[in-house]
Length: 308
Ligand code: APR
Image (cartoon, rainbow, N blue to C red; front, side):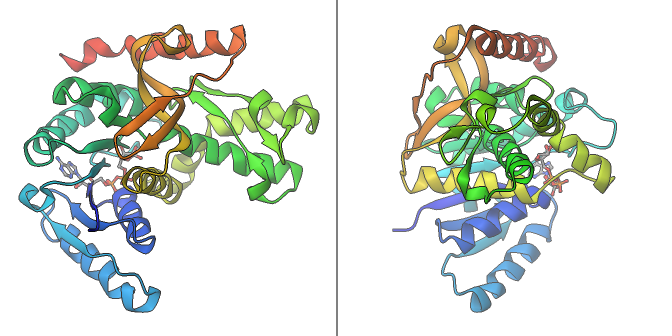
């Protein structure tokens, strides 16, 4: 039987994610939004492309949470995108209210689902979803570290002039200014980039990665990135429903790993049908741990904004 995957929010990121999932036949897709007609129209358009693309996933567009019943995975992209000059923190109260209304419906209709958060500010909204749903922490995770690593991987491939498939990039921490790109653990064909690229090139890669989302916001002017975010969310949802046990950079609730607890941050995690099957505690230097702790402190400083 095909798994049911719900994507909440039929905007740029949600539609891109739903379409990637359908093309990869990851399951049957439900696309839900509060705007009437938009999820239905986009789902119909995507469904009609099946004849061209040759995929067999069903795509249903709806405004009714009953249609999402018993989803295995719910991807939450509902929220306002960041506008130029707006920080992720500016978005927090608006997107927290949206997150609350969405996840309460997930609890009601898909109490056994895994929730994959995508809306920003990611780390704090993932924590908020955990607190609102009271789901076990294994079943609430956030997307962005994979996106940040994808951006870093792209910049490494460009700088070193190598194929993207030869590159592995490691990015931990929070999705924002305090992300923690780790050049030491980023490789080209298994060799650390610190042995291949100059310190200046690596600094540029790290800066461009940290600024990756903002650069696109500045260019688009009326919205934020969606191709790479949609692809990253789809890849994670697929990994979960297909129980792949891949290790993917994931925003996870930490309970003491890396000396950090009671916060959701990006760390390597094995994903499977239960959500986060394992947080992989890779060896980090004291400096890297301290950068992660700084990110944790920053995310925790936002808790008062959540009115929990
Ligand atoms: N329930 C369902 N859908 C909602 C709700 C809600 N309560 N509130 C808003 N939405 C929908 C909007 O109607 C819109 O269609 O969420 C969608 C958001 O789409 P866009 O405005 O196109 O935003 P997008 O670029 O997709 O980004 C969504 O993902 O990457 C993050 O920072 C980004 O937080 C933002 C989110």
